[in-house]
Amino acid sequence: MINRSAGILSIILGIIFILFPMFSSGLVSIIVGLSLLFFGISTAFMGFNLRNQNGMFSTVSIIIGLIAIILGFMFIFYIDALSFLVAFQFYIVGFIMIAFGIIGLISKVTKVSTFASILVLIMGIVAIALAAYAINQPVYIAIIIGIVLIIEGVNLFLFD
Image (tube, rainbow, N blue to C red; front, side, top):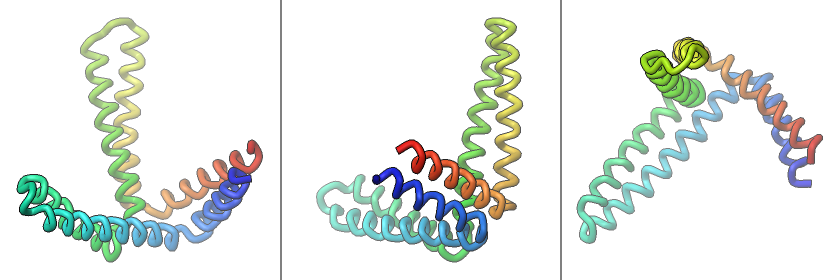
């Protein structure tokens, strides 16, 4: 019963993401921004309260809190969180894949591993290209997320 309800909710959210990608993208940015803002405020207050007990931990907490507050305001008013976060993930994955591809080419264990290393290297370059594209085109990322939500919703609804 819970999976069916989650499936229906996921399908509805997926349709909203597809029909209104800019609204969905903006809403995600506001939610992420508010979450970071509240996290930053609570972390900064915790750091101020622990000033006398643990100096290093409190200083780090205050700094992390302030950074989170700044990022929270940026996501609320300026940055599209959806495209930024997706692009950031693609960049990380892309650079890791490129590193593994290069390491695999250097080690040359077998011909199969060399071929696999070349594929991983190419896919790393593709991931970095997708990251650059995701930053500039948040609409497509929202539509892709909508499609994934619908697929997952149908999966949850049918295979309860």
